View 1 (spheres, rainbow, N blue to C red):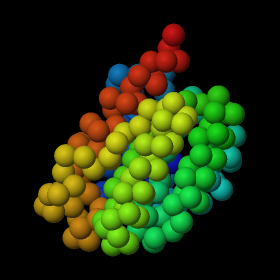
View 2 (view 1 turned 90 degrees about the vertical axis):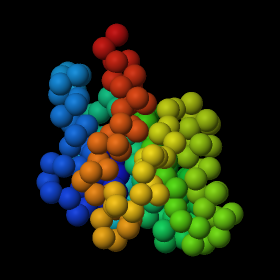
View 3 (view 1 turned 60 degrees about the vertical axis):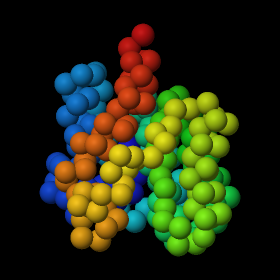
View 4 (view 1 turned 180 degrees about the horizontal axis):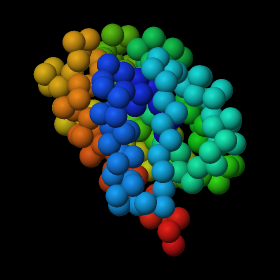
Length: 181
């Protein structure tokens, strides 16, 4: 798992984030796998791109989950560069013989509708072009529920973490079963 604060348990008690819940579920349902959470709060696609080769070499994963881009979007960074960084991570994962799951995000319209829609569409474009599965939106089903967020209104609270896992699991589980065959 290569992500940002949404996957790194920012503001949460250790072991309560969705990736920790994923690790528990994987150990119960797909015990031949383990989950490595290499997420860093504040990370961008550029940071993930620079870190990924070492992670691939160290862990030799069969599946790589990419949950990055939110910080690029919140900072108004160039969308073409974000797309290039994500593409490079997809390519590096494939060269390492890992299957890839891309997790999409939405951002507030602070930089205008064209930017926020272009940001969201980057994930769909990459998934189509690379024929990889995509979670449309990690916060689907509760993004408009302020009571499911921490005081900053950006990071999901502990109560939202099971829903985040439930958004990811249907796309991830088939990738796990693919190596069992």
